Image (tube, rainbow, N blue to C red; front, side, top):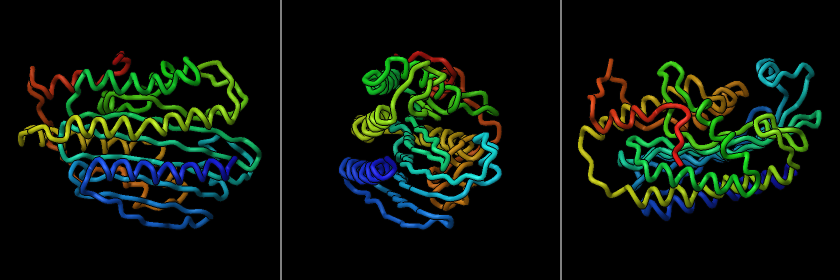
Length: 303
């Protein structure tokens, strides 16, 4: 299924870029094609200074090569094996503080010994948490999951809470979403104790991938025209700083890209165009900023 999955992901990149451009109504993605030194390559697409999106990236890659020593350790593999990895990765940084940051990644990984698995997920990082929108976001992800396995959403939601956690800050990156990895065909998924075929796992991944555009374009429409103050813009920059901290320190996708000698510009596409790190930034008690800060905890039931 390698070719089918790869072709699907290329089309996914095209469709999502088109949806974002139509909604933004100003920005256009610029494409940068690149080759990986051990085989394969990708298409990096970045939109800058749009009407709604200040910086957004939609990346496709399909790379292959021999597992490095560090990847062998990460994957608990001792033999000398080749790998193939393909995926689409997305991050959107909006201009308006009331439009949330969003991230999605869907990917497929294959080893030359026959092992293969799917991974991915979507998470939302509002600068200001809107409880109604947070509820709607999680409801839509749950609906996408439930079509395939009712155990997926609760387990993958908890996985996202654990994964998108800034350990050195003791806070979640945002309101989470779902995260999953190492979903291997015809084997028990430890988190759900269920078994699914390769075609079923691919179908699930497609459902998650295709939920991105309607979810985020709705949030863009709902929030981009809201008035904001300089203080609210400042808070956005502080929250962007926390976002960058997670991506640089804890994100496994960033680490994998660098470990496989991937293209640095594409790997670091996820970073915001501007961010602040004020020393010992003070969040005033009772403020909107404090309300959001207090919601950045694991285990919140948004539905």
